[in-house]
Length: 556
Image (cartoon, rainbow, N blue to C red; front, side):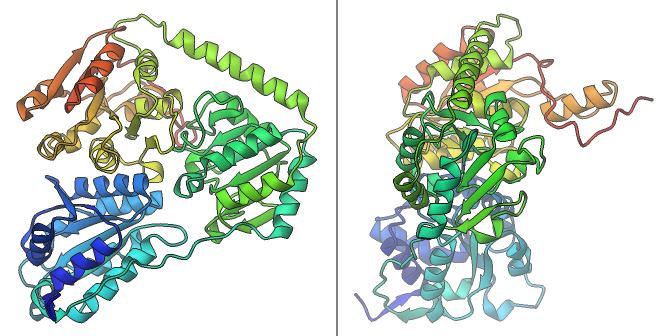
């Protein structure tokens, strides 16, 4: 190794040492030395998006699949970096470890109202774990290591490192980069484990509320073992319906306002609820006793101490790792005497399955969205990864699709972002190239990032995008229909033939017109191993009102 290298090479060495084998970005002039280092060494793949926001979503999904920080190159100071704001805000509320290397104007131009100068550090500060400016080329590599460490420690999240253009070209001492040490969280203390085990063992109506902590901690086996030993129902927090295998006899699916009636009844009527790796946040509970019973005794365990007991009082409040704590509870707890509760749960699950089988037979035209979801559920292979958007139909799909293998569902989570799914699918495919990846989106949502179909094709990352086209911004249309006398303004949209757009880009397109066509189309698209858009017309009248508490009837 030469005694002197560029700052860009030093940054590259840090990424390579930390097992970052793929980065995402959009080429700009602010960090060409880093790009040049990637070109010469070749150990890190580069996925060039067509919009920086999309690059951020790709890195976010890649991080969720790999457990490593997803790296975004905001390679152009000013507008290029500002375009990443949405992706950073998304990762911030998804607790996803994103590291943004943000190009900035040269140090000599600071505070001169120069070309593309904005206060990037202040812009990102409220929406990430840290937004910091590097001012010394020798500090670039250590500060990038700090960013990786912070993003992936404790409650994960995005970190933005702003690097002036001249630091990438400055010569620095060659760095022998090593992997960053990340502290490993431990289980709950023995006395807390004993208390939780006792609480569970004495319960008459127990439920375990499991969240994303099991996904980051690769804890599905531990959660399953706990459920099977105690024979206690498991419910998932919103967006994490893959914490257990679909169809497992003790898995109720997603709870709360975005979930199903069985899982939601469990959290409303239980006498004891053990919360592991989840916050009981807004999307899972609306912070309401309509979804978490007022008299439930709660034991709450999360890696972030500030989340524990914040929204619902916790009798036992613990800051610890979900997987390790689940393993410790399994060793200590005994099967509770709750047979009546178990029998009622199993009967409810049989009833729910029957309801969904009826949905699968809806034969109306245009196709009912729940028929479309049923066809997708049956056609998806067990190793499929699904990315979802926010929106009326997608929120119905969060609990109606089936997820079998670990890390099979990626959603926008609490930022409620529209336009996330397509770019996220590309990032997931880059992380898991041997698994089929399907993005489910509304016709409005896909318009945000449709050009990224070209990115998938160019980088040989074949994905399938299912566009459920109801010619509307569905959630808002539902509100206008229910609370504003059907007076529609802005809710109805006209979308192009996205299937034809895919063909123009060099991919495949499939048009679905009615029931019975979507399942075979999805199977064919996955088997082709080509980037494909399936556009399926669905009933624009079949809308679900997601929230009723925000509106009063407004008849005039």
